[in-house]
Image (cartoon, rainbow over all chains, first blue to last red; front, side):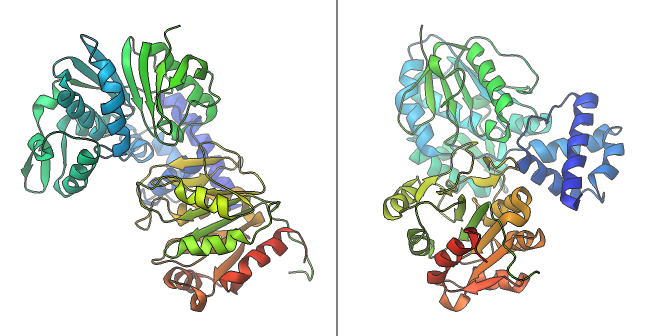
Length: 275
Length: 196
């Protein structure tokens, strides 16, 4: 067996142990990215091999948490893919406005940038005080960062450009306060966001959502887990509710696809049919 | 290596940056429609690009060119371009996958990410190609392909519109072939046809 085949085997064994000891199931994650992240974690861990790390990983929760951070942190940005947020503003918000109150599930919210983006967008579209965003992630540490709503000031130029391209109607700088090299987002945005831990691989659905956002999370999953997650979303969405996926994710050939229609070409925004 | 040993290849991966569009037109445009293995390409494009380059190349080339889609199986006779703002990877099953992990060598998609995953997926049955480009993305990936017994091709730096990507690769490893751009399609066709 070659060295990298041994490493692949060690990773398989470790993931088996992690699932049994901690209840985090990575066995249904696509291997190429998972392995890349694990090797990266290993190189900074001081252990020579995955097997050598395993004994301690299965006993030491703190060490496991550092591994969990390494393999579950997703990068994000505000108004990532501005054309997507523009489409939500122009084609989804008008429907949401017809409801007295709107519930949104943002699955895999990472450090919260897109949850704040959505709150800004909905406020500007006249839904202020009439929505709640349930922003969930598997990783509790990123949720703490999301809760703080503090980002690097140097990112603001980029985010401002995204905001404008996404059809922002205000001045982006009104939403945060600059302090030293950080931008602290307005606490009032957070009033409509609930950050909570949720593991798409093992946890249950959320009821009665009008909109579900899950972008670039399922790209890391193998087919059966993707189907499971889409099933969760399907049972959580009300008829007429919207499902928003990442640019390179689609419902094409998925089990639930018959119950959904695409509302815009080349945008992964779907609407659940009424019957 | 035994003389006249016939090597079997299952895939080609190509990395290119500045000067990529004209280089890809020339290289892919000269490949036969029935090219017997899949080709995966990373070219550095801006994050908000659409699939315009794939559409353009598909119109121009005999071989089918498309932007890679989620969990597609890499199939012979098709060129898959990495989409803007995503890393493209190859699974051991031969399926294509994506990630939005941070840029590598300031690039997403990154040539190294594609090459390193492809090296593990195809091992000795892979051909890696580095073409014109600024920076050094792809060098480590090409080294991994070489270390795993794959075959490596680098565009002659003297022939490249931007020579730093080819030069950087050649500093890291001794490539099996260092050739001019207009020779690469012929070389690839010969290599994958199984002729010695």
